Image (tube, rainbow, N blue to C red; front, side, top):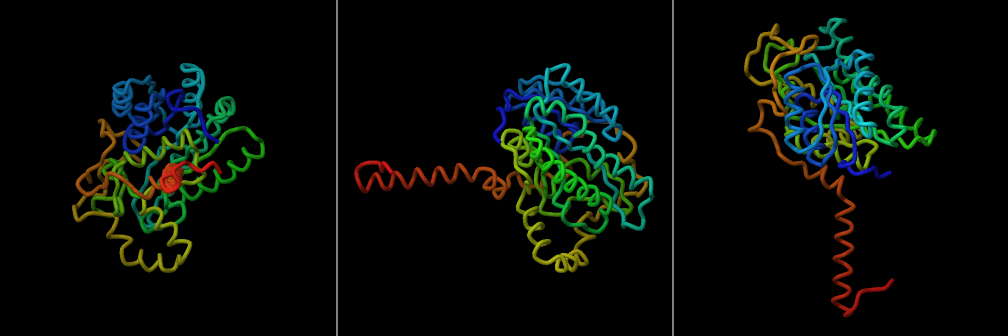
Length: 336
């Protein structure tokens, strides 16, 4: 179902103060959406508001810890009270811990679930009454790792897999109710965001995204496209699509690849103390923006995702080209 244009939408981005969420908020604003941003860090929220207003759109920012259901409900209620409705809710907040599964502390694992999984669930519960009224869209930012666990990321991968199946269930339930609410689950590949400087790690080395790495903007464009034309599940980037196909074809081959590359692909050679400040429980000061430290290694577009989203345009262009060719040969356009 095609939704109303973004220029007429009120979009809530939970986890929109930096990284991909920050890029999503800016992309929605450039298309004229009213954007509400929730996150823990005041500095990042203020930066997001500046981005949105610089694009000529209305903005509202609220300090929100998505692991607290009452705060998420307050974000939804305040957005609807201020702007009259919610058309799209985008659940993006995440944290992680780089550590082998047996080295995770129980409070660390619970915190990753509280933010990543329950943060998405609380957003769904809070937004659903408003989305029913607007026949809107719930967008969950999951991961290509929703389908494949990798070393050092047991907590993160487990939460993303849980989100995918939770919303697979919710999607069918909403269709049965004919509520008009669509649910899109986004499966991104590796993104250059500040999270890799903020995550807790027990490697003693600087974390990095697993290459190939992409800038957040093409991923944000894919997400805001789903605000108008929801996609059931959307892998974003060729790297994400390859991972999904590989997991379907031969999970055992994936095991062997990860045995060889699963550790070294997730860090640089730069030492980093294991007790460095992180954002697992605490808010880190400052406005880090949308990009991380890997600009010089990051791709600025993903042709695979563009083709996936805009194949209708390609088909229409091909059809018009065929009609033009036939017209040129016959001297007139075909009537059938």
